[in-house]
Length: 565
Image (cartoon, rainbow, N blue to C red; front, side):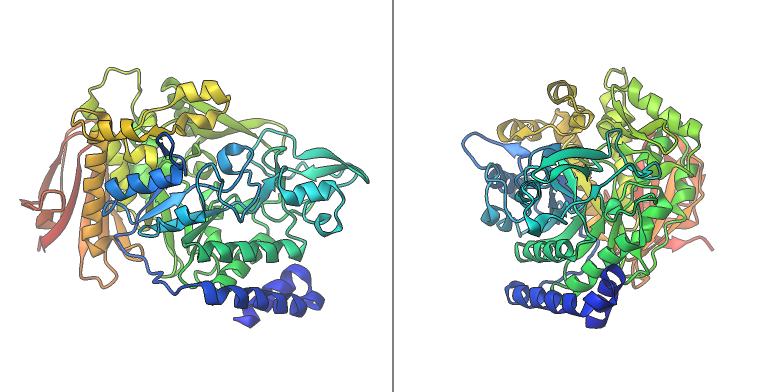
């Protein structure tokens, strides 16, 4: 293990400094190791994570993290295995992603004890390590010319050519700040309040390692590396996916394997699919999971067109480099639905169609700067239910519900660990009033909920929240019941009908399999399979399956009993 760490340190900082830095790394690991309780880090078909904010569920005169625990214990026990609490540290902007202090819990939410109290669920924390708040102590000391922090951030002198830099924002890349030694132009990939850290300074890397080990002590099983693709900057390059960025991830993986082997790194890289999966490394040395960013827009495309062939063809390419890796599958999150991951898969016309449908359904579009000076759609800002079903349309609620559940079933059927956004599990629609309040497109899918109102809606059998939660819970329990859905199992995508996304999941030991059928169209379909009979995982009934009929947007998950000779 020391040799691996030394190799990465030498690559990043040179042979002359590597040995000295390794000694310090080993000291950090030794300091934390006694406080790290051994835990089982294995994954199974029972694993799924709910994505939410620390103040997602609120009640008067109570710290939100305590309310959240009460809500999760009541409604989510035996439904999901884990909770991804979005950044719960002190912050100044971007709904938590501009962190003031990585080592503290925002006092408005609660404290570390409130976070650790939720360890009856597996926990995912965010490592927002590409940037830090301009109000952080680190940056404030930089602004005072404190020598310790002089090289914690990236400054640019003169007027170098930065036109190749790839970034997801239509905002200035450099932000001027006044210091006692004069004005400095500081690198700000995302906003003037989100100051990029300088990982060319090894002190930054060691500081971040210490922070991630603190997260392990506080109960994290999963660490989400936010915006990791932009971590290392070299003027004259694209400043995305650089070899040094991969080396940093590999260093962190090796260090955590040494001190906290139960932990999983998940890379969040909203980029074209081939770049996204590069963060698996060789299958043993980088992220254990990567966000499957192409899945949300491709699933939308399938339902908008009633044709699953594009989605099926892409899903056939989902190969894992090893049994140590898998995908983090999701359809919705606190952010919008990224379009970049579809480039090279969908045509420009098909992407434009997604954009136009989003606008027609009351959503919004965010844009990014291109190297040629133009702008292009980067993200569709819309609630996933609304993206599938026009909130101002005249379709029946049952039809909309079936369509939505079919989309979620596709996500749950794929090899990987599912990540389910709170507003998907609990049947929310878009929050357009929130956008008016904040002026930010992403607010449309970030509404916070009152505990008492949620309880009333989840007790009302006629409410959308009740209907979605009951149907979604049924999907999750069916998935948990079969080892065929193991995150490290295998899958085969089948061509049974153009409007059917059909996938066969097979367990690690090859003894269990499930055929998952999803009608992405509003038409009744009939087709044949090579199974004679099977058990319906949702009802437990035995059915004849050599000839299948699917109602509009129907989902069937079948455990086969026999195969046609």
